[in-house]
Amino acid sequence: MTGANDGGCWVYAERQGDSFLSVSLELLGKARELADRLGGELTALTVGGNSGAGAPLRRYGPDHVLELTHPLLATYDAKAYATAIGAELSKSKPSALLLGATRNGQDLAGRLAVRMRTGLTAHVTGIELDDRQNLVGWVPGFGGGIEAGVSCPVRRPQMVTVRPGVFPLPEGRTPTGDVREVVPELSEKDLGSRRVSFEVKGSSVDLTRAGVIVVGGRGTGGDFTRLEKLARLLGGEVGATRIATDAGWVERDRMIGQTGVITHPKLVLVLGASGAVQFTVGIDRASTVVAVNRDPSAPIFDHADLGIVGDLGPVVDSLLRALEA
Amino acid sequence: MRIVVCLKVVPRPEEVKVNLESKTLDRAGARSVLNPADVNALETALAFRDTVGGKVTVLSMGPPQFEPYLRVAPAVGADEAVLLSDRAFGGADTLATSYTLATAIGKIGGADLIVCGEESSDGGTSQVPPSIAEWLDASQATYVERIVSGKSAATVLATRVLENGKETVELDLPAVVSVVVGANEPRFIDYDRWAFAQSASVKVLDFAALGGDPQYLGLKGSPTTVAGLREVRKPGRRREVLTVTADDAAARIKAEIERAGLVRN
Ligand SMILES: Cc1cc2nc3c(=O)[nH]c(=O)nc-3n(C[C@H](O)[C@H](O)[C@H](O)COP(=O)(O)OP(=O)(O)OC[C@H]3O[C@@H](n4cnc5c(N)ncnc54)[C@H](O)[C@@H]3O)c2cc1C
Ligand SMILES: Cc1cc2nc3c(=O)[nH]c(=O)nc-3n(C[C@H](O)[C@H](O)[C@H](O)COP(=O)(O)OP(=O)(O)OC[C@H]3O[C@@H](n4cnc5c(N)ncnc54)[C@H](O)[C@@H]3O)c2cc1C
Image (cartoon, rainbow over all chains, first blue to last red; front, side):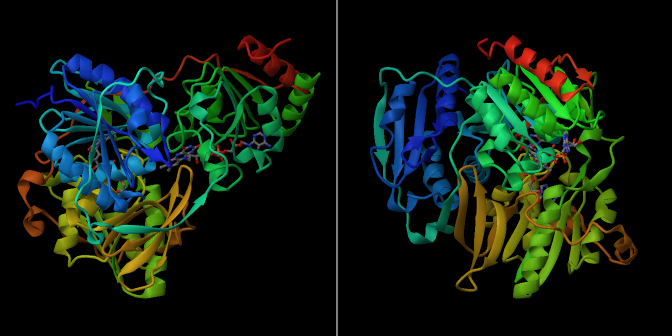
């Protein structure tokens, strides 16, 4: 027995304030292609406090935009969101639902999958179709060293969360599709949590689109000023290992790796990072990797085109001089 | 406060290999450890219990070989350890794993707060905690770095680490939280404590003791299937490693930058 695959593809389009996350637009691009191959329709789903927010999604090729709006949905709560979305999924029975593997995306997906009693394929780095037209998602495991191809042949919807930056960001086009608003029935008791405060962290930077990244690890000792200067000279961005972001040396959205972002720059310069597998999955798609580490046996050198054994301080100083000359 | 901590025992990630012929994982050569995030989850639970009072039970699903790892928990102050072990639980995906853990939580008397790690270092899906919450109709907060008491005994305040900042939510109990790696300084891993740990007992529950609906357990209860396995291809790097002066290093790096077409000369 296998599940139907022509019931349409849904994408959960996640918002931050008024704008949609790039990963959601990336998914609309990919899901358009999947829906066409499977002979179904593409629905972009968005959830929030007020109506009208879904219109910009029409530029990314959907057949339908579905807005679930309710004052209690103004800030994210897993329980209320799962209740609102679950009801629509039960009515429309799509074949697939794709979500961005953001923290809230994964938080929601885990809950929703149980509500729908269906399978959920986690934070994939690629999606293929098998010979029965089921989605196969490639799931990184063991810190990113191994990937499993995971599918959900029988239950529907097939749920998949996808890492940011895996699929290209589609260009906005002439709007398509209708917009339908649904106001779910919700009351206070449907909420499991209420936001008390939100402390916004630094600038928001999208390292998945950077052409050059200068990465600092624990070996920088926390001083990122010269790394920032270097990044500026190269027209790039500063990135960091989890050790460095956890220590608060740079903003968290500069974290690269399994928990952070998967990058694909032309060049990445890695300074004082050991090369843990959870980190290297985030740089292995770069065209060129250069690493500086004082430990000749550091695993990072296996992931580098050019490795320099030595103290990063003097190397960075010399490099700044050479580039400014 | 009744607190349950979900602890997973995992192989060291770098010691697991894929057998490319059979397309299966070779975990036999890998040593096991407590999942790193779960060590922080346990510390979160113990510290919270120490302020509000109550009982901490650690809960794990896995083969009988996991038992010694769970003994660490009573040794550092957990009140009870339970291992769910039965062939019927094997081959579980996150739907079945979360069902089994949720059923066990009910079986051992329920919980006000269930504390998990953010993700395991093997499967690493991070789906189990929100899934447990749904099975139990509990509220949830994932990627949490801190929990403190709420205004009333029916809530806690949880601070979540999100991509763009930190969100603090008032969370209704019962609730499931998942704790980020590095959220705190765990009170062990001091292997001298193994001596105490040997005397602690771990309660083992099998299918007969757990009960539950067999259609949701193990392989049978798992809607996902693994269609293939692959080692993530390491890109073909040049791997040229040099020990040179800082100036020479800078010149070589600059050449690399120019080669990548990034600098106008
Ligand atoms: C569930 C989970 C998820 C994770 N996700 C991520 C993730 O997304 N991203 C991530 O980065 N990590 C992640 N980690 C953590 C990861 O395992 C490593 O701990 C981390 O990447 C190490 O950071 P580091 O290389 O900066 O520090 P270390 O491993 O401490 O390495 C520092 C390096 O700097 C070198 N060094 C020190 N001083 C100097 C100097 N003066 N000059 C030159 N070299 C010097 C040292 O030789 C050493 O190799 C995760 C871990 C877990 C358990
Ligand atoms: C490479 C790989 C990819 C996989 N991909 C998928 C997939 O896409 N979809 C899917 O459904 N399954 C997948 N699985 C199977 C999945 O790993 C198992 O279901 C596993 O039992 C639980 O999931 P997890 O390890 O991802 O846990 P996570 O959800 O990452 O774990 C989070 C927390 O839940 C708790 N927890 C998890 N498991 C246990 C346990 N056994 N005992 C006690 N506490 C626990 C711990 O507190 C842990 O820190 C995959 C497995 C591998 C090896």
